[in-house]
Image: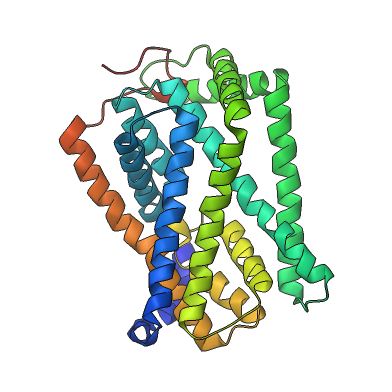
Length: 327
């Protein structure tokens, strides 16, 4: 249903593909380099939080999980499951993998919601901002405050996490036809929280740099796509459009925000002062690098993973009975 609603906007963007040949090739090269570097930062963050030294395991699991997220309905859960099972197959402790994936997800969300803050100097300085982009900035700043508050509570208090773990364990054990029962989930969540907190405490500056790199380079990729069309919009307004689109894409209406991102980004770029024709072509070029090519890359990574490790091993995941890593 969600894809049906946004299909006209998606069709409008895709129909602009013949105009890609008119884009400045050097700016397209910058766009692709920035996007590859953004994905590298994302994989580096995943490697940091799951404490796995194998680049092959982290990159193949990360890209394969990203591909699943972008092609399946409810893809966030499915993609996280694929990442978890692939990491567990390589020998990462299941609880460690689950805690690291959760930490990476929360850190990534915080980075997205923080983006509008960097546009505030331009807004305060007198840059004209449309009402739509202004509301997007307010939403982003409010979301950042809530995420930081939630993260602070979870990292500094035990009772909240124990209650969440108990509620999740109860729900999991109510699932019919499920193999095995979940036991000791609250205490295991607490143990993994302490490990993640210790690791991030030692490596907080690395995590900050990697989050900034992942989000910032993806934004640079969008700016480069716009420059490739010849447009020269205000970077602060483009940042607001980018941040608002990223937040909208979090709503799981379509796989990977397909159609939602195209419709939202095109409209918000117009509000940011980009000519309509340039907004459409730039959105198409940007999505080729950020959405479509990583899907094919994820499929290739999964094939490489299967050749080295064989089929993914069945594991109960972070909610199953505790056990050691697969052998």
